[in-house]
Image 1: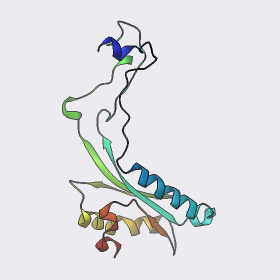
Image 2: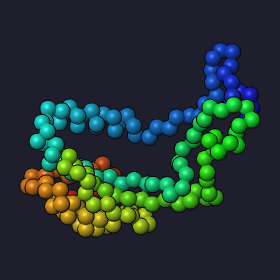
Image 3: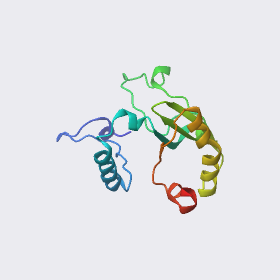
Image 4: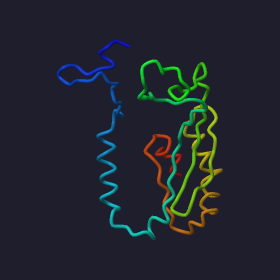
Length: 157
């Protein structure tokens, strides 16, 4: 690391990592604001009938981001100042799950790359059992993101 990476310039600029933002972030923010405006007046009884779902990637070893630590000179290799890693990242798993105000639903491990057919199979095997286990009753609302797999005509049927 060069001196610029550890110190600020005379003007006060610091050498930092760029923050990442999703390409469609402005569109997503507008959609979220529309959703919040349209549903902000709903009471708690409405939200008890909403089932939320999403998928996530869990790193089995290590982290997908940069970590920083304040340390004294000469203490770089002390265990409290290090993060253990394995070569090639150590792998990950991708999970689909759902939850509501009444609790968590089923969790499903996604093997391979998920396409529309796999998503529909996950819903067929996990959605209704979760609704029954959570005692959602009639008139429940299924909430997911706008991934094309989720909004395809075959999925909506």
